[in-house]
Length: 236
Image 1: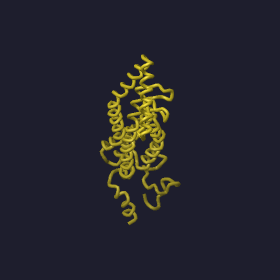
Image 2: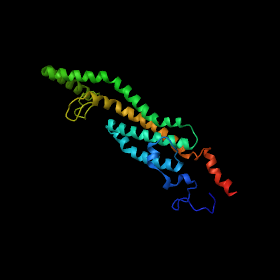
Image 3: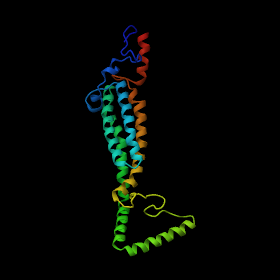
Image 4: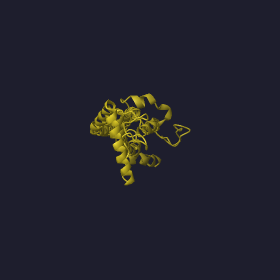
């Protein structure tokens, strides 16, 4: 592109590569077709869209709605993976690097599986205790009374703890607002926060990698520095 050439986009005069023309962007191919190439600008637009689209699902993960949150994050991760494959192909880099995009999701699932497995026995113990209390209400009341007295004594000594149902300070993991216990909810409450934190930590690293390397690679290959040196060579 020379100085006398008409601008590629009148509203964006800083665009100097025809491949970056906004009018040429195909959202369907960029996000759903891994067999092709995506320019820098098109990739940046797609990545920005996916980033903001992922925010509600990330909030769900940290707000106790781990299942819908991780499903949404998983779908977005796959779309981002496809966009990265196309961008790396356009930059003449190995598309295998795009596998890093799936790393936060993989780490999240591994941490969740490990935490859930470690708490299965505790969930079974609480479930068995609840069933025993229902089978023998008299013994259950005696046990609960003894626990209340123990908590009262511990509270006076400054070492108070909540009971299993979290009364009166709020629900404990696995218990609903009505006081019913769910083993599945217990495992989600125990493993979800740690898994979400692992996803956020690794996801932030991948975000930096995307912004400072993938999105800056020049179209058609070459180093990032060569993209800034090219205008000087043309003007000279």
